[in-house]
Each structure stands twice: as structure tokens, then as C-alpha cells.
Length: 421
Image (tube, rainbow, N blue to C red; front, side, top):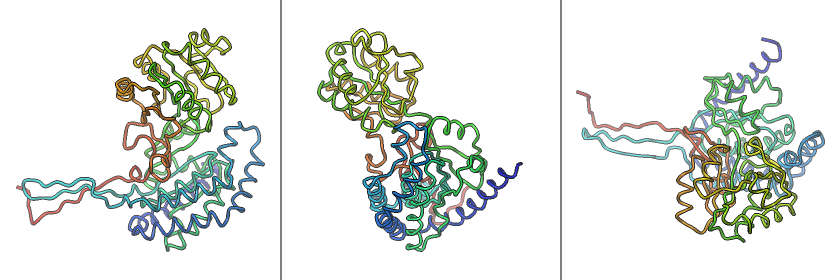
């Protein structure tokens, strides 16, 4: 083991052991204590806005050679700082998920069995450019009774550190251990490697970033992983769609923020309405700066579209680019999504309730939407206060991951002296 790797392993072990000790205290903390920490941290974010923006300016100054969408994810503004503060307050206002009785039943022998929610323990969060993840993850982990170790990318190192200082102020005010929320002081990849090997010290790894990061985590981790590989989302404009709604919703789904995982990457449109509606949709998005890749049928309707390959339909653009395909009804749209999609979020735009039901029930994806922008796939929009990420796997959690999804459960068995024959 070389010196860098050994040093990273030592740093991680110290942080994880401190986090595990803190997790026990946070798990037992009553709701008013956790809420005080969150509200104090929110006030600190507002009070230190100038400091946060200055730290972010340092990160942005070093952000060379990055796409506009990536820079957008990295950027803090006064409005985004306020949104972080509001997110902490919204999480504080939510019910405490710890200790909830999820189910209860009585056996014929009189035993009462309860399934009770409890924290997962120590969570390791690995993220890239978005500094607001520091606040969101801290809030959700703290309220759900978990400790968290956050490792951000080097692009957001100064911003994440400034946000963490506000979280630490909240923990101190509530009398909670500082180790409950830790941010790695290094962006060295060796620290990530140490996190992935920390079975027994970290209970769950959550990667939040590009495909390369998520793939590495899934391949190397000895710790359970909650992840999604990509956000290759589709909007399907059905033959019975309201044309004006389709134009409005698609523009938002694609162009509101092109770099978020809930942004629509592929437009599917029924052949029956494509000749009339597709040119309008393309013109709307082109006016907003969007580029296109279209299949042969889309090109026949809009001759100026560049050709789309299978690789294009399998690409999460995270930018001002949209793949376009003409399909023949709901089954054809579902076939395309199953072939190219990432099981994240898909939307159907239609006034036909039966078609909508067929589409939603036919999806394998974590989130299906009817007459709404795919960019609503977000923990805050779901009423979770914030999210720690979007899960597209089949186990434990799917879709936006909020407080409930950061809990597991145990059983309480209450008897009156029963013995087993």
C-alpha cells in the first residue's frame, strides 16, 4: 500500500469510527433537538451568504474546460443559497421518521409484533459538482437519525466546506456531535477508494454524479450501494395529447435545467400527430437553444434534423440536446424506453386516461408521470423536503430518496410470558 492510499485509509477510518459513535447519539436524539440543529444551520446559511458565494467563486474560477451545464450545477447564487436554507427548514418541519410503527399484528399465541423504523447508521455520500448536496444530505441524514461522511469533488471543495461550517454551527447549537456530519477535506480519489472498502464502518454508500463515478462505485464497493446509473428520461407525446400542453411541458422538461438527472433526453411522439406537432416542438426548443438528433421518420417530417444513431438514443445528454423518435402508440413507446432507457423517469402527455394507465403500468422505471414535466422528479417536489439522490435499483428504495428511504426497520415482539412449545 503506497503512502497516499495508506494516509487516505487512515483518515477514513478515523472519520468513520467517529461517525459511528455519533450515529448512536443522533439515532436517540428527540425530534426537537434535530430540528433545532437544522433551523440553526438554515439561519447560518443566510447569515453567511457572502462567505458562501465567495467560496463558490473560488471553485468557479478554477472550473476550466467544463460544459455550461456542469458549471450551472456548480454555481451558487443568492437564490440557491436561500433554497438550501428553505430546504433545511422544510426537512425540520417533516415528521420524525425514526421510531414509526410501520406495521403491527397479533399472533394466535398473544404475541404482538411491531415493525419499527430505525436509522441505517453511517452513510457515505460521494458526489461531484453540486455544492447544495452538502446541505441536502446533511439535513436528510440528520433528521433520519444517521451520521454521514460527505466526499465532494475537487470542483466544489471550497463551496462544500463553507456549507459544512453552517451545518456544524447547527449541530453545536443543538448539542449534537460534530462527527454526525463530516466533509472530507481532500478530493483525492484514494479517499473514495477507502470509503468503498469500509465494510463494517460505513453501512451504505450513495454516489451522486456522472456515469463514471457511479460505475466505479458499483464495481469496487464492498459496502452496499444505493445508486442510479443514468437519468435517461423520456417524454412521450401520445396521439391524444393536448398540443399546447405538449409544447409547454416539453420545453420545461428539456430546457428548464438541462444538467439535472430529471431532464428529458428523448422525445417520443406518435406518428398520427407528428406531422402537425413535431415541427412546432422542434421550433420551440430550437428557439431556446436546443439541438437535435432524429430518427428517419422524424427527419422526414423535419428535414433539418441531424440523424440519430442507437448510441444517441442511449445517451444522457445533460446538455441542450434532444433525441427524437416517431413511434406507433403506447406499446411502441414502451419498447423504445425498455431498449434505451435507464429506468429513471418517463412521462406521457395525453388526454386519454386509458392510454396513460397502459403507459404507467407498463413501465419498469422508478417514476412515471402523466401530463407533467419529468423535472418534477425531485425530492423537494415530492414533498420530501430534499433528496439525497434518485434510486433506480430494484431493492430498498426507488425514485427520490428522502427520510423514509434512509431508514431500515427492526421488529419489537411484546409478550406476556409466552414460551415456544
